[in-house]
Length: 170
Figure 1 (cartoon, rainbow, N blue to C red):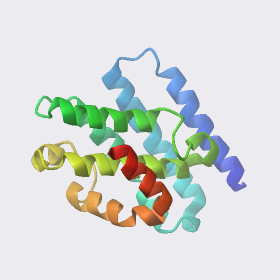
Figure 2: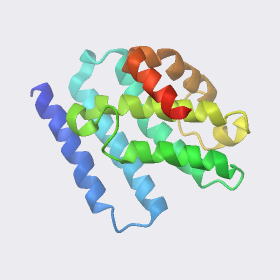
Figure 3: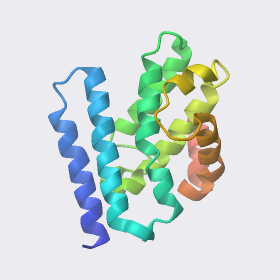
């Protein structure tokens, strides 16, 4: 199977799943998106086996960062200002028009979503890191994960892209 087939299959799977979720309530839609995204990325990584290298490890963080952002937007302990930032990151994951579109790049298009989401999380961490930890589904400590993604951001999306993301953050 060629790379293009795998990327096209991934984009089609995400698009078709999103269309089938439209009638579901918001929390259920977020969970379905998370499950669909996790499964699609896992299958993509398995198909690409050793070709992705360390990028596979970051791709597998994408669903965990998405659901963390979503859970924090619904937590009453999070301020309205922070919820606005978190909501923008959730929207960035969901909307097809972003800096690196998934429809064109397949799963690699989620790298900018990951970096943007982590920049948002890093910005709101001053409020209460414990609240962020409570909602984390990943394996290692979320603060370590955030720092690891921030340190790798230039390599994941390029320094120009990181500059654009920082500019979007204000």
